[in-house]
Image (cartoon, rainbow, N blue to C red; front, side, top):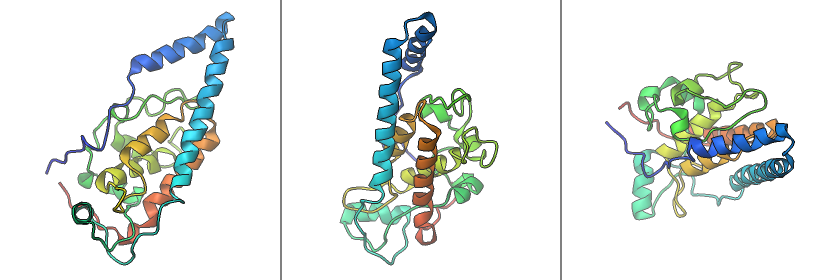
Length: 218
């Protein structure tokens, strides 16, 4: 069965904008770097702020009703009727990794068709040329970001797409666009911010795993 994710996901900034940013940074080597350094500091501050907002939002969500199982159909029904008996939704990244035939987004989707180009320390552009399925399979020492970053990130994107929240109905802790925006804000951010976001998404992925129904194969 083909699933429509067009309402949940939006196109990220194009590569031309990234190339312009990189061109500005190269000016530093030509003795014209003052304005560039100011721009870089501003972007790091913005990255920290965006990531911090996401880190705090999971703790500030209201307590939902307890007891029931969350499924995609239950979320859709709750959005229509306003009635539900589950606390929240989410499936571990490990389950998503091992069940790619149940993803709400094709595993062959290129990572950068959804996410922006983000540089990490000396690794260059993260996950360049990889699919979502390949990024989640990097689980372990093969991930260029120390702390196993891509694994919870892709798990969070899948959970947000499968179980979209609304203001009146619980679903996953974040929307798909919030997950995408939080990653995009990390361009050239400090490693600690990558690790903090990974930890937050990992908690959200696993918080309701036991009470979330697993989707059927396509």
